[in-house]
Length: 57
Image (cartoon, rainbow, N blue to C red; front, side, top):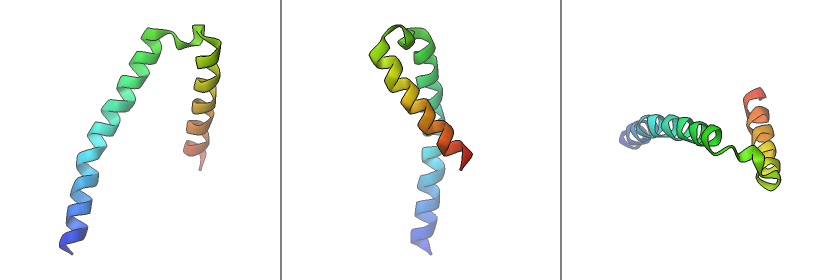
């Protein structure tokens, strides 16, 4: 039972960090204008497709 509480607490502590990371990446994408680099744009398109698929499941 104590192990479950520890895992639950760790998950709750990681969530804000995860949200901050997502927000930071979004801000950086807008600022850096990654879409100006065709190679980076293709990688970003793949990553966005993966995220969309994840959200649909």
